Length: 370
Ligand SMILES: C[S@@+](CC[C@H](N)C(=O)[O-])C[C@H]1O[C@@H](n2cnc3c(N)ncnc32)[C@H](O)[C@@H]1O
Image 1 (cartoon, protein in one colour):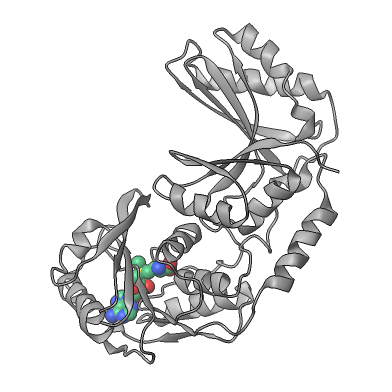
Image 2 (cartoon, helix red, strand yellow; image 1 turned 90 degrees about the horizontal axis):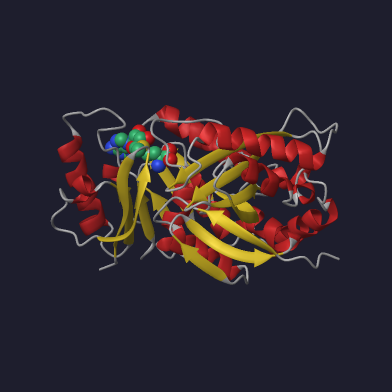
């Protein structure tokens, strides 16, 4: 029986905290939203559920403890006493990353080194696997040292399906956050007007099919001493039982670049989604709605990542025409910088989310139907 309650923190891209908090609430968890993520409490079940189901988060941390230290000997002594053995097997290689603000201890390399020594002392020698690394984060602020252990391993946007890439793909968790914030739940048709490697379409498929994004990958918690494979399997089985592989509204993605289409189709196949999803070559200028209403999405090229080219102003006018006229009765969602929607003066786009992507400030802009 897992009676222990831990403090967890779902790290998000700044700007996506509210989307992640809503996802945790849907899992039945009480949340505490702060800049850069969302705190929640629970046992192993809640930790596994968060890793399995969160679509918008970057990783899930376990708060190991907080100590106060103003010099290195004190830091070492206090870190040794933290309950490392609950999460790390003796001998496991650790990657310790430290940050420090307004504190006596400011040399982050030395802080990380002292933490490594404390972990070795606390756990003793062992034969832990050398292949996998456990990430440990140390954050010092006003001499308070907060230590967290990462439970996810690879970044959560790595679902495992996107091995074929096209130019300037959107991260999977950002695409999912944009869809969730637009109110997408699979009940209305979705069209991605420039699908690239298929990220929107596949994330939409996972949402529509109620398929957890973490079902096909490994996590750091699987190498912890208290890993419970049967509990994990139960949660996976439960997710499969509750999922709907068919029976959701159609999803379609087009792109003018045949190489992007080949990548998107290969990714879709790997994601193991149903037959309601159609990815095909085509120009967005030729799209016409086949249903009364739905969600039209797009992540237009914006010069900086794909190279500036003379055709962009006309391309943006074409998108404006598509959203404002051809698909007037559809909700439209664009992920792009402000400079792009500024060119579409005839449409009222509301910025619902703002976040950084590839070092560029972008927004989720939504136009309501009609
Ligand atoms: C920023 S990328 C989209 C990336 C995509 N969201 C992903 O995650 O892979 C923009 C895409 O627009 C496509 N594109 C450019 N002109 C187009 C047109 N006229 N019709 C349809 N797609 C077009 C490009 O081929 C490119 O794949």
